Length: 181
Image (cartoon, rainbow, N blue to C red; front, side, top):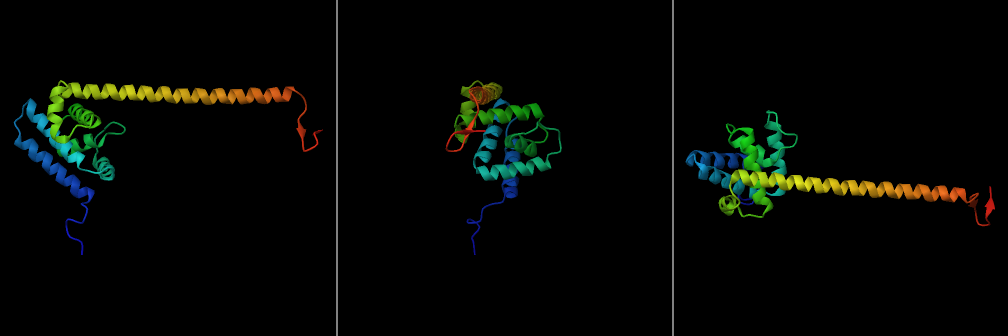
């Protein structure tokens, strides 16, 4: 019989635990500029403990339970923050999620997130930097996609020109002996 330590917690258990921890942190902190960073650090710690598969499963569950109008594809962090702290306004949630995602992109350890936010100029500046990076990455991907499309179109045009040049040389020969049709 498996022991409780051997059984992997379900996504619902993980989500319930995460929401409880975030809410406890929210009620415990002082409402000031550093309190928000403590909450962000707690959210990041909870989020970073999940595996990729668990993040996907939890994200699907949160999307199903989210009834509010949201962006077309919200990040799991946004959904988690909204589920744990529904009184927080959506623009604030977006700033918080983007600041955490910048820390994640920079491979910042969860217990070092507050220092990272401070060193980068604060929560809002981190969110803006993440959005700038994301926009630059999307622009680069779009340029690469356009270059691939251009290369394919150029190759198609070359093949058509070669085919047309072959027809212009004369009749096509088929078979082993070069008989014309």
